[in-house]
View 1: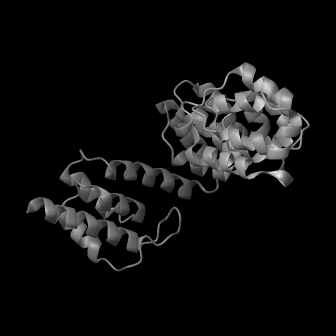
View 2 (view 1 turned 180 degrees about the horizontal axis):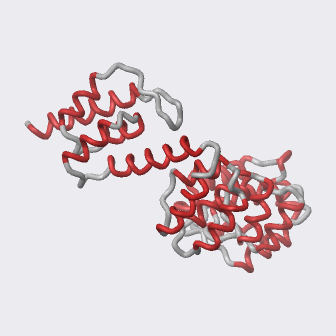
Length: 276
């Protein structure tokens, strides 16, 4: 049976008796039908199931129906990442209390009280929360600073934020203030510098002087972005297409030389085709 929305799929689950749900969905007895449905959810996610808006009443009903059944971990794990809105806090806390779908919860955006609880014990949840506060214009500077200061020694969080775009300039200023005091400040600031340069390198509207400036940085992540930009002048594309020297990224420590060459050569072929 096919469903148009995730809410329809959950509604169908609610109509089935507990023993039928366990027969189809418990870890040790997953049927071919349920495997197919799980695959469909994970493959198509929100796009397949519309906007994935599921009502509060439906989620509370699903929680009441599944609680304590062997199948509940499989079902919650299959849907949490495809919900447009957070779970009701009482449901999320109960699932965490009993270690149900913990991994999916940590990778999802939940209500702040749940997010704070998860952030205290898991870095993935902390990153999700910190990024939401940093990038969402609806979240205040005060909220972001509270999390930033509490976890100011978390290098992974700072590294992730330096590669993101602040929703307000004051948030970026607050982040840089914390980063400047960190033992790895030089490396973290370089991540931010490269991120900003990559964004400029991807811009179709930059001028010749800026292309030159970005190229002269000799930063592999920036060069790769330039190699993909359709507006990058031929002189730079030719130089990048022939460069066989190692190009070690200062961020990921990965040699990007072959990727830069291939992207530049592809871009050059596009220039040649268009010029005929």
